[in-house]
Image (cartoon, rainbow, N blue to C red; front, side, top):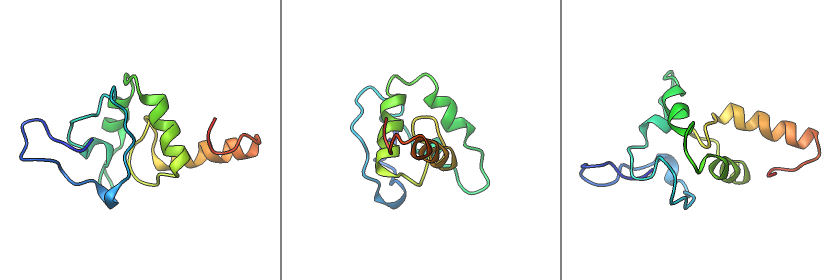
Length: 97
Protein backbone atom coordinates (compact mmCIF):
# COMPACT_ATOMS: atom_id res chain seq x y z
CA UNK A 1 0.00 0.00 0.00
CA UNK A 2 2.89 2.34 -0.35
CA UNK A 3 2.77 3.58 -3.93
CA UNK A 4 0.47 5.56 -6.17
CA UNK A 5 -0.04 4.47 -9.75
CA UNK A 6 1.32 7.23 -11.96
CA UNK A 7 2.22 9.26 -8.89
CA UNK A 8 5.46 10.98 -8.02
CA UNK A 9 6.58 8.22 -5.70
CA UNK A 10 5.30 6.50 -2.62
CA UNK A 11 2.94 8.25 -0.27
CA UNK A 12 4.13 7.92 3.33
CA UNK A 13 2.11 5.73 5.64
CA UNK A 14 1.13 6.72 9.17
CA UNK A 15 3.68 6.03 11.87
CA UNK A 16 6.23 4.24 9.66
CA UNK A 17 4.22 1.03 9.64
CA UNK A 18 5.97 -2.31 9.36
CA UNK A 19 4.00 -3.67 6.39
CA UNK A 20 3.45 -7.35 5.66
CA UNK A 21 4.63 -8.78 2.35
CA UNK A 22 1.46 -9.93 0.62
CA UNK A 23 2.25 -10.11 -3.09
CA UNK A 24 -1.32 -10.89 -4.10
CA UNK A 25 -2.90 -8.11 -2.02
CA UNK A 26 -5.42 -6.00 -3.92
CA UNK A 27 -4.05 -2.85 -2.26
CA UNK A 28 -0.47 -3.38 -3.43
CA UNK A 29 0.76 -0.34 -5.33
CA UNK A 30 -2.28 1.83 -4.57
CA UNK A 31 -2.62 5.06 -2.65
CA UNK A 32 -3.15 4.06 1.01
CA UNK A 33 -5.77 6.78 1.69
CA UNK A 34 -8.83 4.47 1.58
CA UNK A 35 -7.27 2.23 4.22
CA UNK A 36 -6.30 5.11 6.50
CA UNK A 37 -9.38 7.34 6.69
CA UNK A 38 -8.99 10.63 8.50
CA UNK A 39 -10.86 11.28 11.72
CA UNK A 40 -14.54 11.58 10.91
CA UNK A 41 -14.25 9.85 7.51
CA UNK A 42 -15.98 6.54 6.89
CA UNK A 43 -13.81 3.41 6.72
CA UNK A 44 -16.23 1.80 4.27
CA UNK A 45 -14.21 2.54 1.11
CA UNK A 46 -11.17 0.71 2.47
CA UNK A 47 -13.27 -2.13 3.83
CA UNK A 48 -15.03 -2.56 0.48
CA UNK A 49 -11.71 -2.77 -1.36
CA UNK A 50 -10.62 -5.52 1.03
CA UNK A 51 -13.80 -7.50 0.40
CA UNK A 52 -12.61 -9.36 -2.70
CA UNK A 53 -8.89 -9.40 -1.87
CA UNK A 54 -7.24 -12.84 -2.01
CA UNK A 55 -4.91 -11.81 0.83
CA UNK A 56 -7.66 -10.59 3.18
CA UNK A 57 -7.41 -13.39 5.76
CA UNK A 58 -3.60 -13.27 5.88
CA UNK A 59 -3.69 -9.48 6.17
CA UNK A 60 -6.11 -9.69 9.08
CA UNK A 61 -3.99 -12.36 10.78
CA UNK A 62 -0.92 -10.13 10.39
CA UNK A 63 -2.72 -7.10 11.87
CA UNK A 64 -4.01 -9.14 14.81
CA UNK A 65 -0.57 -10.62 15.50
CA UNK A 66 1.08 -7.18 15.32
CA UNK A 67 -1.64 -5.48 17.37
CA UNK A 68 -2.02 -2.91 14.58
CA UNK A 69 -3.94 0.07 15.93
CA UNK A 70 -4.22 2.16 12.75
CA UNK A 71 -6.05 1.71 9.49
CA UNK A 72 -8.10 -0.93 7.76
CA UNK A 73 -6.43 -4.33 7.66
CA UNK A 74 -8.09 -7.48 6.35
CA UNK A 75 -11.31 -5.52 5.97
CA UNK A 76 -11.51 -4.56 9.64
CA UNK A 77 -11.26 -1.34 11.61
CA UNK A 78 -9.13 -1.01 14.76
CA UNK A 79 -12.27 -1.39 16.91
CA UNK A 80 -13.31 -4.52 15.04
CA UNK A 81 -9.85 -6.03 15.48
CA UNK A 82 -9.92 -5.23 19.19
CA UNK A 83 -13.26 -7.06 19.44
CA UNK A 84 -11.86 -10.09 17.57
CA UNK A 85 -8.92 -10.21 19.98
CA UNK A 86 -11.26 -9.93 23.00
CA UNK A 87 -13.39 -12.77 21.67
CA UNK A 88 -10.34 -14.94 21.05
CA UNK A 89 -8.97 -14.24 24.53
CA UNK A 90 -12.35 -15.04 26.06
CA UNK A 91 -12.43 -18.29 24.08
CA UNK A 92 -8.84 -19.13 25.10
CA UNK A 93 -7.54 -18.96 21.53
CA UNK A 94 -4.83 -16.31 21.94
CA UNK A 95 -4.10 -13.49 19.50
CA UNK A 96 -3.90 -15.44 16.22
CA UNK A 97 -5.98 -18.39 15.06
